[in-house]
Length: 405
Length: 166
Image (cartoon, rainbow over all chains, first blue to last red; front, side, top):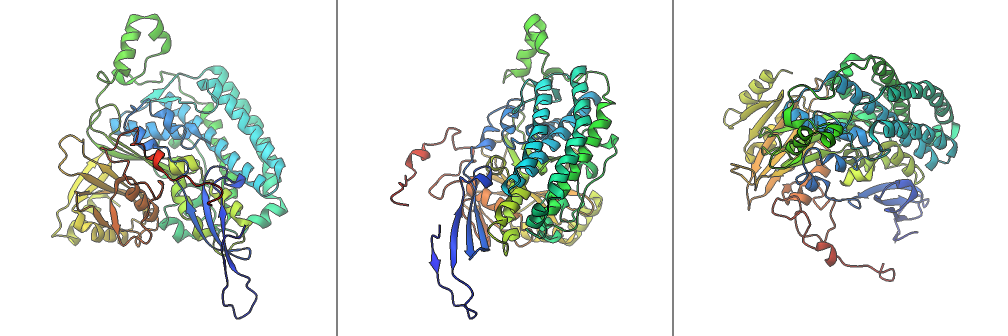
């Protein structure tokens, strides 16, 4: 609906008028709640002004109230497309602050979960975007795979969606042999499903024409704008924290960092598509070599949350539980600050933590990749058509809950 | 880039500025005066720190033994060498103003708006300094430590627009 009609002196007489279109906050193609104010010349986008904050819920303020283990439930809800990746990033920074070294088994399980989440996230990004562009079939194929990953999450953590699985220095519980078998089976069928989706999307004439050469992001803009993850790699920035600053057990595995030079929407989807194969490669290497041993390292004392069967069956376990969770009894933390980041499916997800000595953060700043990607959106959409807005939005995979926190 | 190399280079270029270097968990940190922020960040930009990964603020009101009220933190990264450096500066009321670094890194634009929104720190030279996440009618700065977690009831005072008015 045109809100504002402005006549413009145009010598050629071909231009109609410049008008403003309000896109969102409630719109099926925004997936979540974000708003764009588009300035259009006919169907051509002259400018876009993002207006965010509709999902702001004070997560960072809550991070100053809840302790390091409790806040994981909030972190889950930031990028709810890949909750475990957020949990791993959060506890990675807490462990860095406290100087905790994880056991090999814990590292491997976290690596497998992080890569499952990458597949999970990329599947949604590609599936929903092609749905917006008119192809419902690939969407169903992608969501079929996501269901299987939900089942794997449920088996390991007891929750399908908001798993809250990681703890400082470890995990809520160990995984079973049945779970390992389940992941193996998933990887077996995943390759076939991936090929199917790849054919449906990447060889689809309509999809290619709607994404190729659209929403260009140059390498210089990607670096200056702080783009990370698949968005930056599609623009020729060869950065991947898994390779450049290895954390967890990524050093042990053989995988490629997928990059592209073209910097358009198609490249971003292509990078995501190929990254899923690399994730599957990492998982299939890791799942065959999970080291035996405990989840928590020796001598963690109060930091390790006790096993629930001990808590309910022995007095020592119950004492341990209170020591670990009562605010005045918890472990002390160095009075320091630290910035730690992991490669989440969307890009560099970092936490800047300031500690005043308590077992909770004095300041828990999230560095959300979506925020910086969405800030680049006006630059990418200028000169494109109105119908390209959904393609570019989809290729950035902006998650409003992470954007607004 | 080695940490020693960065330290020598910055100290050599700014002999008159007091620089406090520290390291923690393998991270290099540099504390500087608010008046020297812009020149030192511009210099680091030329040293190869081409990405501003994060810019944020901390309210030190309740921090034990803190001398200043606010700390503003810049996390820089060099995409070539994967070196990181964290630059910190401190501000006190009533002079809550810093030079904007939007001209050095585009990514500062929204992050500075967020700091203004949450802490009330203004950035001189910012192209569009207005609230990012909260509504324009909001008057408080909620990430300050003296702001209660449950809020002050601002929600009830927001204007209500009816369909007829819109």
